[in-house]
Image (cartoon, rainbow, N blue to C red):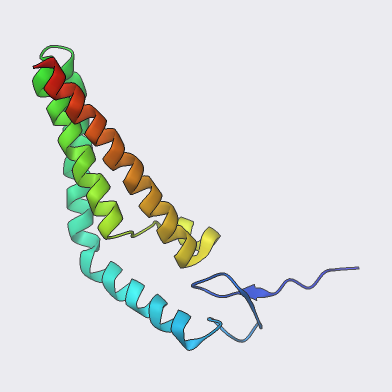
Length: 130
C-alpha cells in the first residue's frame, strides 16, 4: 500500500494540499518578501563573498610569514561574512528546496553566527600576538 505524500508549504514546510503553494497568506507574503530581498542583494552578496573568501585564502598564506597581518586578513573577512549572513540570510536554492525558506534562513543565520564567533576569536588571537 502506497502512502500518499502531501506537498509542503514553500515557506514554513507545513503539509498542504497538492494544488496550493503556501499554507496561508502570511507565508506567501513572507516568501514574496524573501524573493524580493534576494533579488536586490544577490549581486552585492556575491561580490562580498568572493572578496572575503579570497582574502581569507591570502591571509592564511601570509599568516605563515607574518602572523599579525595574516591573522587580521583572516579575522576581518570572517566577521564581515558573519554579519552579512546574519543580516541577509539568503540561502542557496538547493538548501531552500530541501528545507523550505524559513528553516533555510535559520540555518544560514546559524552559519553567520558561527562565522562571527570564529572571526572574533581570530581577532582576539591577532591582537594577542601583536
